[in-house]
Length: 196
Image (tube, one colour):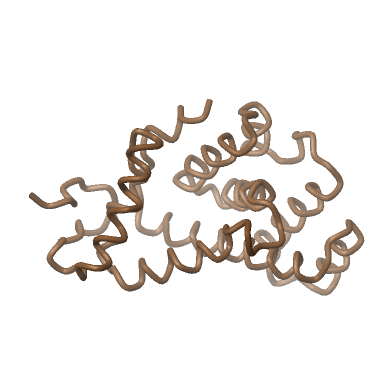
């Protein structure tokens, strides 16, 4: 029986026979982890194997941005930026998954809800506010981005390694928001209540 039986986007369902065996094994590991630890599977893992090599590339890049052993910013800061970007772009799918992730990291669902609705209403440190302001500005005014955005982050106390990572994160979430919205990915209902 095929692993990809649900219609979860505007696209055709993946066909398991088109997925290289070694990649399917890797995708299955992710799915097994989610099922065991969350009780449900992120729907993108049932949609994106349609283009397995591109999906593998996406996962590899994402992993380089969220490995706390090798990164400069905390995963809390990065998921916080992701919520600002996703809220600004009105990406329902990304808001559900990343608010879930941030609730799990912070154990503060009220704070995460405030960030999701309007980050300006949330209690933030100066450094957190600078990251949120940066994420919002480069999302809404990319054509007006100048050295000033870097200078503002430096003024808040970030070094250039952290600033480069912040730019990757803002760009990454804008990238994912665009294509997730374009393909009409259906959020998994489990994300709404998970980590509350």
